[in-house]
Image (cartoon, rainbow, N blue to C red):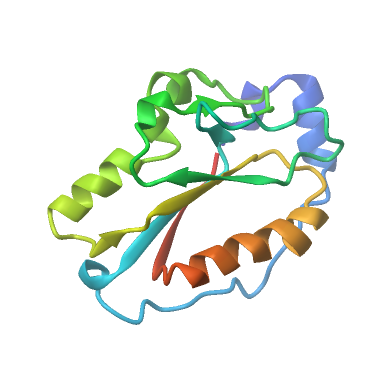
Length: 160
């Protein structure tokens, strides 16, 4: 996130008034086995979708809390960014989606033996969700259940 003075007055006012939730202690789990033996999945809040998937709906009040599955063999360059926020420069993500969804880098880590396996699916959802209750109650548990079914050991969270 940039410095507050980089944002417009409207965005600064929103950020200053937003009821940020504090989570303390932060939930944490130690890795049970070496990363080189672990299955990894990406979870990004960049609002990226595959060409055959619907974009995220920026008309949903409080934010679209749905998510998209991105298959392991997806060409990262083909991903389409549908993030609704205008409070950051989208040029980097649009130039190279690996900035927000580093699947090519994860594949390289697998080739180098740094991680054990790349999961068959990864998840993308919309950031800038100003009413996160539905995300916490519905979407996050559904995403976690998919990761559990896939026996994912490590989820690399890529916030945007």
